[in-house]
Amino acid sequence: MPQITIITPAYNAEDTIEKAIQSMTSQSYQDLSIILVDDGSTDDTLEIMKQAAAEDKRIWVLEMGTHSCAAAARNTGLQVVPGDCKYVYFADADDSMEPNAIEVMVTKMEETGADLLTFGYRQIRRRDGSAKEITAPEGHFTGEQIRGDYTAYTADSACKVLGSCWNKCFRMDRIRQYDIKFPGLQRNEEEVFIMEYLKHADSICNIPDILYNFYPIDMERAFERIPEEFCKDVEIFRINRLQYAQGWNCDNQKTREFIAKEYWGKMILGLKLCLNPKKPLGNAEFRKRMKQMMKGLDEIGYVPDSVSGSTVYKLMKMGFTPAVKMLLKRGL
Image 1: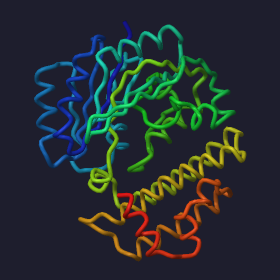
Image 2 (image 1 turned 90 degrees about the vertical axis):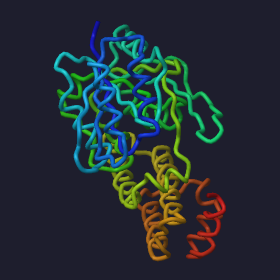
Image 3 (image 1 turned 30 degrees about the vertical axis):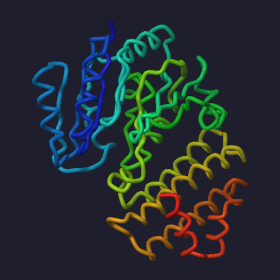
């Protein structure tokens, strides 16, 4: 049976990494390698990883030394993937996999010959354990279809082709052949990696199976985990989105509307991060980010009705910073 490698970066994940590892080692499909990359953790994450490796010879632990970012940690993991590995999967340190996840991935990749497999997932709230399943019917697409209609298979799809890596399985030979790496961003790096991979993908398959349990971060965890330079990364990501759309010849109003909505949502989060009660960034930084948002929307060249009709947008246009802050504080 073909081998698959799971790569998981971790930074200060002592509360969740043990459960994540357990979900990997208990997979029904056993012919796998697990590469755990510690990104300079200051808690007990590394010790938990080493203990797991001592108990399971399939686990390799890599140490970054100093804290960098998940992108650099994943790239480090890719460098040591075994030569006979056919598929690679990226899991996060604060989520978990279903017991049959790898078996389903490998089986479907083998059956279809797909370059990329996407699948459903369960989104679970940490506070109360409530969950919703996000999935889409089985579908088979060519790379040309995906690249030619940016939104139909990305923004408008229930099981998005873009987004995070943890609901996707990749072919390692494609990654090696085209030297595909995660960009040096602290956030949104997965989407850029996927877009670059899609440049070289001939076939994509989506299946409805729920194979992953995703625990989104709330604002309290966002204050702790999302870097202060978040908005700079969002700006770089916006530029990347447009460049890929233009390169794929799908730069149209519908695509720009999607990019504008996505950009607006991410930058609103960037504004909220200024309001961290433990580490507020101050009025000057808040105003700077507001100006960035308006300039970014101008450069996209399209403001969706859902944005232009919002109270926050109207207040920003008038420069009413205190009122914008007040509205965003209410939503925290």
